[in-house]
Figure 1 (cartoon, rainbow, N blue to C red):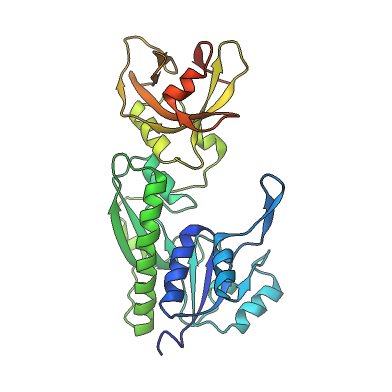
Figure 2 (spheres, helix red, strand yellow; figure 1 turned 60 degrees about the vertical axis):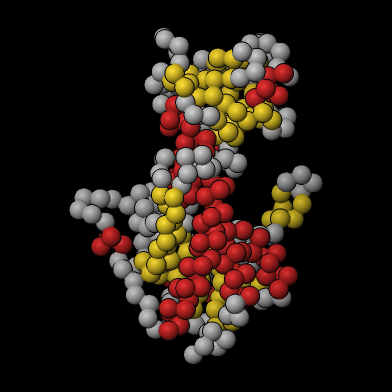
Length: 324
């Protein structure tokens, strides 16, 4: 069988998945169906929001499926009618066995971490938030438990000291697309070899979780060390963004998003965590280890993103961190 005869169904939602789908289409692989999330209404003006994968699939005239429920009989039958030999999953929902066990050549997933490290919904964010200096991408065959299947291939990259999650995301997206094609080719050639994740763990080592990130996850806890908060900001910038609550003078507290910080610096002796130090041009916040975190780019609720000097020029009154 050659790549023109290999029938592939592709599952994905965000931009991260589009690059791999684009490479497959432009490489002449036979994409017989694309599965993505249903459209939703949201944002200003209640606009119709379509996934990045749908937009690309429509542009290329690919057959599109948008099931609400993956166990729905009508969807399962339509999927079965595509007679796929192989399914590829990138940044999509957890699949029921009736779906992932369908194709004779299997279903593989591209995951943005070096499994078994960072299983879960937000592997790129957590790698940066935890201060890791290396991450990567993995392809693996699906099985019952999420992100636990046998590993096919892995590639790694370095995380730079000043890289944020957007930079790492873009690099992994390109690297992942390369590896998706390599994985398809090895499956097609019959040379694929996979390794159980349990064999990749050293004695006593446990897989690292990468749970979904919620609003409260993004809140800056100024009792933590400055280095941890420096990484926390990088791992959430530019989205969903780290934040803290601030009060200007006697105003009501407002949310301040923090996009960029500088390297931690020593704090004055006996300064309490959460103390804001500012000379009108710079702003540093004291952290729990006796160091400060300089804030370089911020956005207060109701305003645009701006540099700290811009923000301070428009601030009237003493700036303090608000607990509530």
